[in-house]
Amino acid sequence: METNNRRDFLKKAALTGASALVAPSLFAANDEGRRESSPADMAGNLESRLIVPKNNGLKITGTFLDEISHDIPHQNWGEKEWDRDFQYMKRIGIDTVIMIRSGYRKFMTYPSPYLLKKGCYMPSVDLVDMYLRLAEKYKMKFYFGLYDSGRYWDTGDLSWEIEDNKYVIDEVWKMYGEKYKSFGGWYISGEISRATKGAIDAFHSMGKQCKDVSNGLPTFISPWIDGKKAIMGTDKLTKEDAVSVQQHEKEWNEIFDGIHDVVDACAFQDGHIDYDELDEFFTVNKKLADKYGMKCWTNAETLDRDMLIRFLPIKFDKLRMKLEAAKRAGYDKAITFEFSHFMSPQSAYLQAGHLYDRYREYFEIK
Image (tube, rainbow, N blue to C red; front, side, top):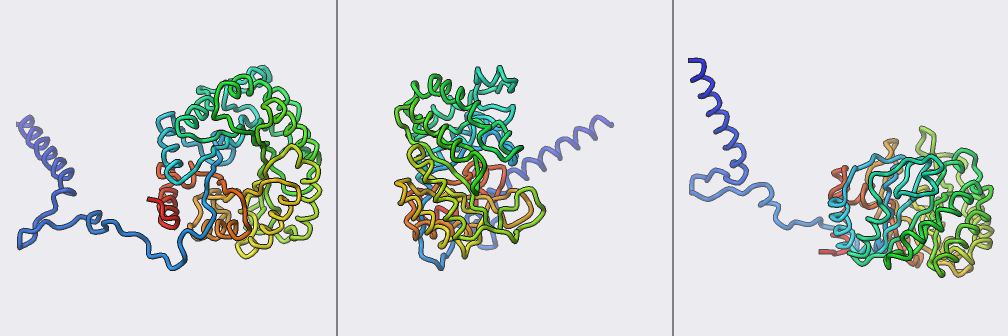
């Protein structure tokens, strides 16, 4: 008796489960026998009704690859997920990928003989090799981000990063640069905002070695502007002692003067200033880059710095305003930090895929 009751229960449960699976695609007919539409059918090919001009900003054609994940959750992707992400990137016109750093403190993206001897951890996958293969597959250029020991962040002196990178630059070129045509350049990964101790010498030393070993491949840096939203390490959203445009120009004129012969481009991070300050700062950045014969890129951050939750994908209008300002200033290229977390349809953040869709609508990308 108990057995029959259990069988009856299991049969009913199975039928209920099957009907639940079928129900979404078999909506009940109405009185006239017509099939009712699902929400997806009703939406059809609807797009946002934009009330601003479309395609009026500088398109994003490059992205950082943040695989070390210093302050952003790791997505634990394998090659299958990375391959799919490169397809998403390619669809919107990204032609450049930049590994933001090859290592941070003891974690590494590739099996560096030098860094392993220094006590760094062995990675399970050679990400540098994977990125270079994917870059070749999708006809992109890969920029190698240098090693970050963390000592600059501890001391405020960027010259600490020179010594380790002497070895990293040489071994990486021998391991990958001579092998892959997609190895397109170097990212000098030290992030500064002001006239930082050791910055000019460090950028010049590492930039020169990168160019010497690779027969002149391009190098670039991506500093931040010490604006009102440069509040790292605090629980505030803004600060009072933000740099003025005049002081920013003065300090970066000195830095560019000392590095322009070995650093080809500068991509200032755009998230630390307010949206009504973009034009003024961007104009100065472009003027300085032109003065020293450097390319002026923008690092159009797709993370939102206007909230205490660090970090979530940015509101589309904020990204749009930044890209429109970059176009007005005549910038040469827009890259972003960073596509895979904050803009990819397969990101751990649901809203990242929506940002991808809004971006495609705005730039009329099918």
